Image 1 (tube, helix red, strand yellow):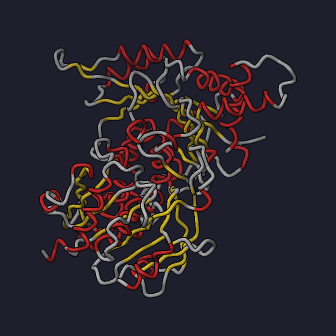
Image 2 (tube, helix red, strand yellow):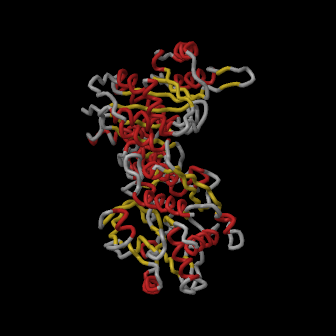
Image 3 (cartoon, helix red, strand yellow):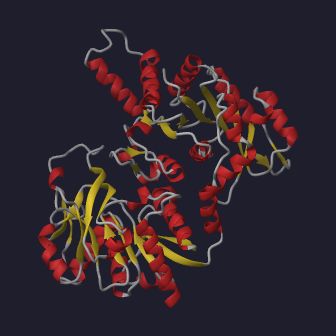
Length: 538
């Protein structure tokens, strides 16, 4: 019988309260006490995964080593815990129904009527317990997307009710994250929304064991007693989560509130060590006390929504702390950049990162930004589409191939320096069909990336359909753009550099997915260091 303990995190009153950050912070505290912890996310949308979603809809799509296209909260989990996630850490309603319908088509239900209870809930319960059956974890935290009361979340809430009853109170608990709003006209915090949210949860048969209350103002002792009384929880189980200057403060704030202590007490875990957050706090100390600052331009097409480039922004925080530099990221919409305003748009920057993306909108702005960085010796970092734009720009403006393009942008170009991958040519379905997950890359001796990584071979995560066209490689290399990272199995060019430029690197993969607090990504560290050097020499 599994000895794994389960914690379920639900949300009430409002979305975007930060369930993922609370789940990751609690997991960090439990990990710091010596427990093996992982987190999973249950998403109530009917998409099979977020891979086909526009970033404006749901923020970035986070990719795991095993090629799963997942919710961006898994990025928070990995950044906090420094533990890899997988396909099993993200479940959607679409995937649940797809699996149940496939079983029905195969006749696995022996002719019975297939219903939400028990068939859908059984599938959800099975997925929730999948990680627990590996024996790799002492505690599994399950974050349930959406808000209590949503129609979409009901099957997940019912599954939690069943599991909690089956496992017993010592083996499963529910944390309910809620909002305690401040009414400025009345000059007071109001508990009624939280009371109603807890009541809605109880109507589904679940009693919250711990309340985590998001608030802009300190919760008084009297207000905590009131919440405990009306919401049927212990006084010490009313936890305040006040707005923080950075998400990386939240583990320490939850430690002060005793969230980990209450959790361990309720799960009857008595063998916990004192929490060791020394490494975490060293990072925080460097992050909050930088010795200098740099300004990086993030050139993208989804810049209106910060979550579209969440992992990149967090990677800059990690690399900034490592360099003891404050990285100020200036988001610049590539659709509004052209050759006429480029100098004005990029004025004052110490480096530019041309971001990933799909489709032709805003492409010429990205090409213009690459050219500006190349010609002005401005540190340049291109990721995925950003690397492809660097190849296109160089082909047009150095090789003189004026119609050089990607087949993604122009299906009729006579010079596709970026080509559709051979394995992608007969694929029609969009979901889960790209080159995904972790792939090997060998680094060229003497290259900048070889020096930065300090190793001959790396594994990085990918998400793309188009690739560097090897037909143009000799021309590009002889004119100064070197291929310095190659996939050993396919020969695919993964990294390009311009050795005569102070710092010009483009990568086909997504290094931002692997940057964590404990292990900032070396490419981001190197890029921020180059930007810092550029700033000091201005």
